[in-house]
Image (cartoon, rainbow, N blue to C red; front, side, top):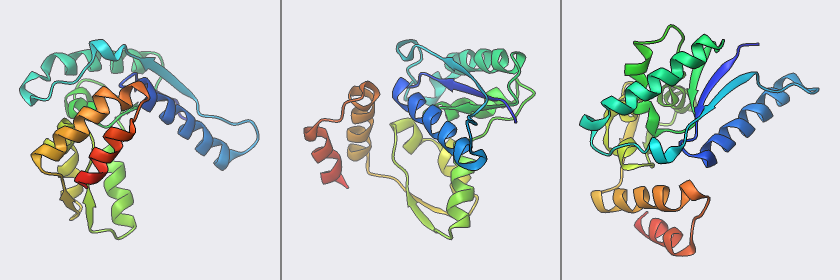
Length: 181
């Protein structure tokens, strides 16, 4: 079994979901008491908040590269980010490590394409919705990508950082998000 190197803490909520889902899927496939073989590096998200401006990602990309290198040195066979937005740094990191990063947008594009879906809505942080690191991989598979308008992107972004990252999703924000979509 390969050892996955997980970069988590971006947020702890999404990291817990990745951890649980990976282990459930391995157990469904292999049965018995089998679970995922992994190394988890969980950051303090307060110190790793992603800038919305892509020109400000250099320092964060360097930090994530250092973590990926530590996971590689510890025996990881590949790297998995436990959230969408950190993939903004994936290409930079990939150039500085010798193991592959499993890019969420590549995996999503392959799954969407395999299911013959031609149009998708992309929701997430403003970085995920506005930058090309996710969209371009979908477009390369001839998948049309719809993103909300600027006001809706900000509503969703705020809900992610102000609530979902804290394991909260208030009825007020749910209504706001659903009304906008």
